[in-house]
Image (tube, rainbow, N blue to C red; front, side, top):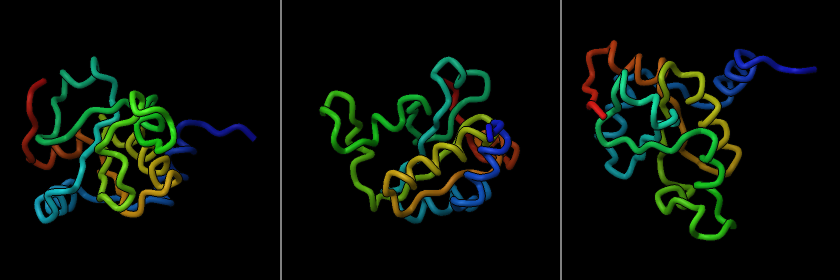
Length: 131
């Protein structure tokens, strides 16, 4: 049976750790090796801004960048250590859930997502940077 976007997000959220924006900020501050990955498309970053220190890898290319067997030009070295803590975000949380599940499926051991994405982060009064 076909799944809707909302069903896929709900399924992903049930399989990954969901952090409040405050928990995500605290986790990133406690472990400087934590990587916050914003999976929005680059042209979608500007209206909302980005979480300071986050990196942008769109959801569509995330599995390529995180792969360990593709040629190096496709990979992102920051996503090669499966034990590195990774927190995903997007605009509202849906794509972040899909990204976190994808990374978990690829063997990442410490992956979580921000509840509400960057919107939730901003609404919690946490800092965002202009792009």
